[in-house]
View 1 (cartoon, rainbow, N blue to C red):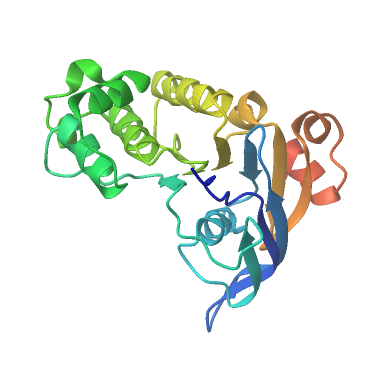
View 2 (view 1 turned 135 degrees about the vertical axis):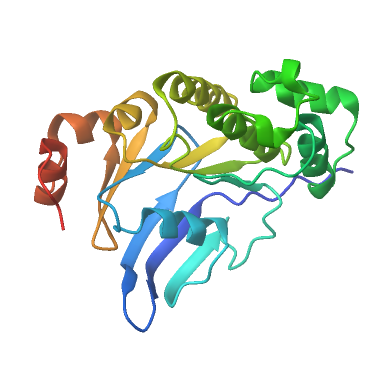
Length: 239
């Protein structure tokens, strides 16, 4: 009899703080990530978006508060994946980068699996190219292929298009949209309001280390409920 794989969803961040001697990065932040359309985190620089993603991924522990994954106080992380703003490419070919990711995820690095992943991100024709010779946009798409090698239930993206040109940004967004449509939960931080409008099912607005507002995207962009979010959307400085 095959036992179902335990789900890490919902991921519940409850009253979490992250602080050092000199600075508080998250300040009693609370949010829940459930299955469904992408959740997009927005807010001014330094508001805690990247740290919140790392907390939810299980990469760092909170100073205070609690995180649960599927009701449990810990996660093995096997079905969680993350793409950073500046991915690190291994000194090997594009295909070998994906092969390494498959093996690291406990899967066979079969040529058919490598090819399927590269086709998903539009890099099949570049399989034999050294990964470090790819353009910035191509490297980010390769990072997505490596993340998808984990067959994730949740994919975290930390400003994945911040350094990309418009064409590369569109290519990454198309991949993210397709991944979300396949049933993978996307949690993404971005500074690009246009991108948030295009991709978000719901929006979490952070300021001063707190989740100030979390609401469906259409409601957020047509009538945010908090003065901080309203000011941010207007283009005012929110400190």
